Amino acid sequence: MMGLIIGLTYASGVVEWVYEELTAPAWLLSTPILTWLWIAKTMWMAFILWMVDRFGHGWCRWASMGLITLLFAASGGWITGFVILRDLSVGFYAILISWLITVATMLLIGRAHKAAGILMWPVFVWTTYMAVVSFELMRLNTGLQLAGL
Image (cartoon, rainbow, N blue to C red; front, side, top):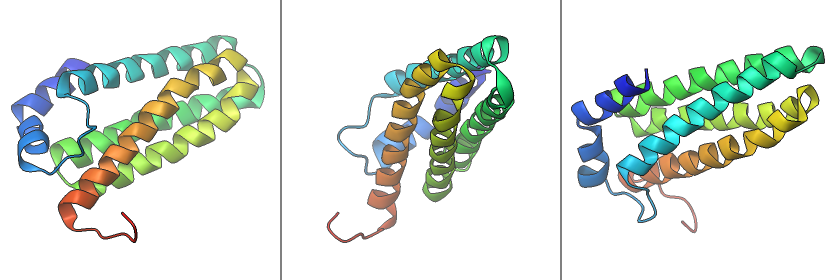
């Protein structure tokens, strides 16, 4: 699946679109780094899901597993909005939803399994970075004006 996503981003011209056609923030990571971090985040989330499924307890176990599953779906939403549709607004709102689900997961998952709660921090950091990147791309390329920005 990840190979398909990577191939799609290169074959569809999204890389050229982002790095050559759009105005991007100077702190945007390079494509290979973004790609490998996205893959690592996805595998990390799968590991956390396994931990919660295998070792979690209580009602929080099921709720956490549901939220992590929603995170996978939200990642698909960002890929659809940003990579396939090339819509900066849809991409931003998809990653914003993903960020909100990540926060909800972090608030709950530690009750199901403490180590899984700690392991969610890199996912939170990554999702926050991608939300800020998506916002900046949208702001810089759609003429969105905010006071003081």
